[in-house]
Amino acid sequence: MASPTVPGEPGQGGARAPPVHVLVVDDEALIVLAMRADLERHGYRVTMAFDGARALAAFDKDPADAVVTDFRMPGMTGLELIGLLRQRRHPGCPPWS
Image 1 (tube, helix red, strand yellow):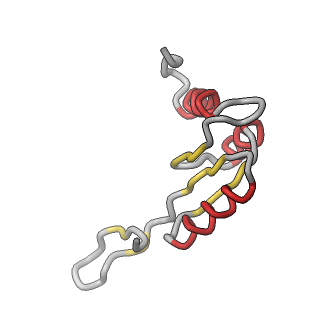
Image 2 (cartoon, one colour):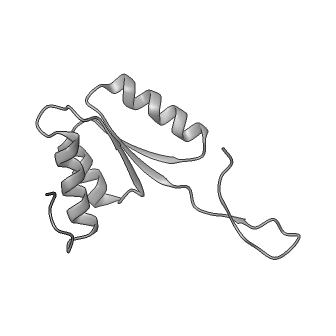
């Protein structure tokens, strides 16, 4: 997959858009490392976290455009993490129903 481009003037081919930032969260390091390698190979910028608390801290420091998370992790499930990240990104959104 090629990096996205921003339309430019005719004949110029457009300027490169900043890479999409993906937060990858899993308690298994090998899975996170493999996903990072694959995503970076396709032009994405990746932040890794190995549990929900670290993912929240990473998101607060540098919000991601997308999150890929394991569902079952010790301490905080992926669904709980997504709910908290959703509240951080869109504070007015109602909680999960």
